[in-house]
Length: 128
Image (tube, rainbow, N blue to C red; front, side, top):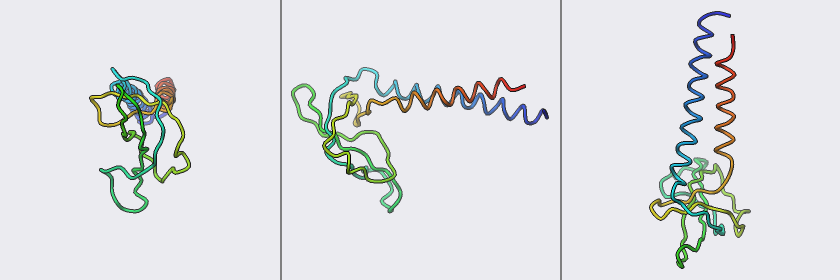
């Protein structure tokens, strides 16, 4: 195998491992010190800080939760390409941290993506 291709695979493998670590770091930085609470999806709407163009994505869930005896309506940190109105009224588990302005939905998506990136990164590093 040509040396240039080996160098490319090594760099790509290391990059994927770093990205996997960064994804997990960001996820657990977000949920550290948070409480896992049930919430009800009120609507799926455009986030306030997204591009207003049609087709630009940026949809988020508005979720109702009860924390410390108070009813709160907060957005999740999701970013969907299109409106998910069919989810309205469903119950989801969310991580609530009073110090953060958004909620994190409980899901294994980040962890699975990190595992897949790490596996591909290790496979690229092991190519001879």
